[in-house]
Image (tube, rainbow, N blue to C red; front, side, top):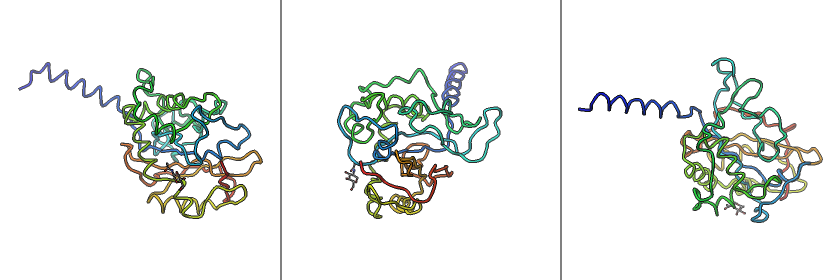
Length: 263
Ligand SMILES: *[C@@H]1O[C@H](CO)[C@@H](O)[C@H](O)[C@H]1NC(C)=O
């Protein structure tokens, strides 16, 4: 029989743990096509490890709500979109991105645990080689990918309910399980300076190749043409399994035809 005081302390610590667990509904595993990152008006820089392969690279693993929350009350608003966050690390001039706010809505948690925020390479030393291949920075702010990973950890990872090592290991494992470049190539969607592809073909190829629906995002090349920029695959709260994306997202594409530029 436990002494009441001990039981009380235990209960308090359990409550403390559960109240710090972040509530979110799913993760987005966001991968970017390097050709589409680099050919915009703002360009890119290669990491100090050299030019990355012409392959999708991880941008991040982002906890997300299925319904955006109003910042003024608890009423959920429609549409769980994850607009805005894209490349805040790379292009810090982007507006409307602070605190996950978008038109007074909070659509994802961010910067959850300042005390746990510093990332040292030592903590993920066995992953660094894979990270350099699969999660390279293309930012001109820093050619050190660790700066990019550290930013992603602080902003998103601290809200994931995962430890640092697990957070990065799970993102890497998910990426390795589904090679988007190969999945698109199998459907005839290959990098090209001139060809365009329909968004629905891209979307269907990913659904067929992975078994799950994903959301897509375009950006524009220096000539203003739509191109496939990022693929948002949806992942369960454990960061372990893909799921069908529970909510749609604005694609930012103007039309149905997109490029997949060479890199
Ligand atoms: C993914 O597939 C592409 C195209 O087949 C290949 O070039 C690339 O090396 C693969 N990536 C990984 C990480 O295996």
